[in-house]
Image 1 (cartoon, rainbow, N blue to C red):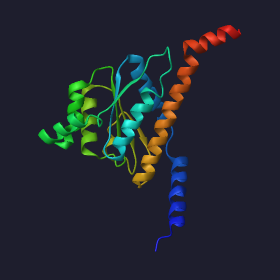
Image 2: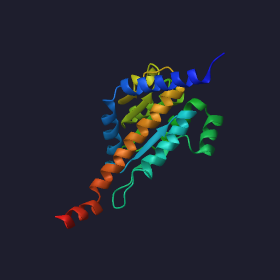
Image 3: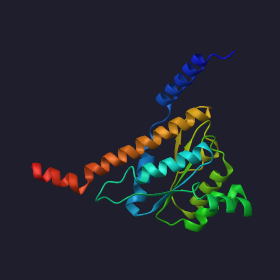
Image 4: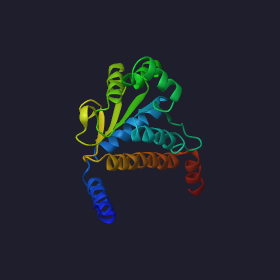
Length: 203
């Protein structure tokens, strides 16, 4: 019989260990890629399935509303998993493996970037979206787990969480999203016209 306390202790110990050891260097590259989209006035397109689709939608909320400061340019972010009518039409009439790639074919512009989220790194529709974005010539960022899968060798910037547990991978992907967007908000507040006026008044 499995004891819950032992299971929970093991889960959170693995979570702690992965948090400490996953490679952090790509995080600044990820930040710069996302900030570049805002600077260019482009759109950050985000794709994922299942729990990663939920993270995609959550990331769009935090990247748009969560980073915006009055007087500063917003970051446009859209989840490719969020338009149910379009998603199911593409899946029904073409195939589920094409649902993200085809949306990028419709919408992608040179100033945009694409963020792919896949715990395995091997989701066929997410890999297809990454390939389409690279063929179009826009930057790509992947959040992956396990051994990184195909996306680890395909995306321009890869944040890899080396653990073979979907829950822990998704937990850390959420943490990465919060780390990046909260920093973007803090920097936008520091650079805002209001902050500049406050400094001028105190000088």
